[in-house]
Amino acid sequence: MSKSNRSKYFLNNPNNTNIPLLRDELHKALSKEEFIVEIPVTEDEIIEITEKNANAKLKKVSIQKLNYVDEKCQVKKIWKINLEKDIPGISTSSRTTECAILVLQKYESSYRLNIILIELKSSIDNKELEKIEEKFSSAMSRVCMLLVLNNHLNPKQGYNEEEIYVDFKGILFYKIFSEKRKSEGENYSQLYSILHTSNKSGTLTCQTILREQDKIKVQCFCHQDNDLETEIRKNLKDLL
Image 1 (cartoon, rainbow, N blue to C red):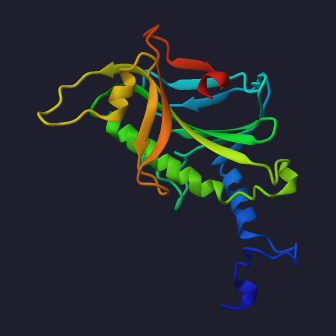
Image 2 (image 1 turned 180 degrees about the vertical axis):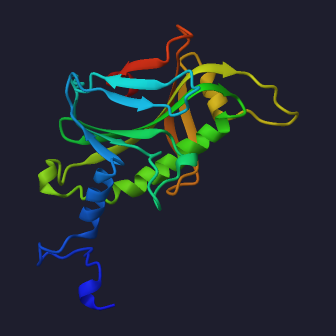
């Protein structure tokens, strides 16, 4: 193949701005596929996560009031990563959460990037909880790899050369939890213990690409108010 027929990308080429960098082209492609979408930080904007299964009793979670601010920090940017979107070579839809919501908060002298991994379930049982734990750990590894593709030193982004802390959190929305009898000698999962705490929250220890024993904070929201209600609405503040 002649050079003129090759796809020409550079990993780094400061002397020629006419030749695209591979990282920049990948960003454009992922945006075009709506794999990564920047969400406006406004009062009226809503992030919707939908369940594709037509028989699901929990069909949608809506996250509202995105322009959250308090005395310590304010939300500056939000991105939604559609982890289940079918993109050849990138998708791992069977072992990932529905999506990841990335929320960049500005503090007085630093930033915090909250990575919120969201899973929707109409009904769950204690035997399925281990699979959900695997989804959280796999999504953590996947988002870590996506983060290093971004040029956080780019002055156009407005937060170059700033300290940015990364904080993972897993959110499980569900309607029904059904107890199933365990076999003799079979242990209960960590998520099972978290579901049985008073506030349905705790810390999950799991294996990621970075550590054999990584940790993620988990919060579970059960919606049983109305069997006919198929949507859960939460303010962004409730997930941070």
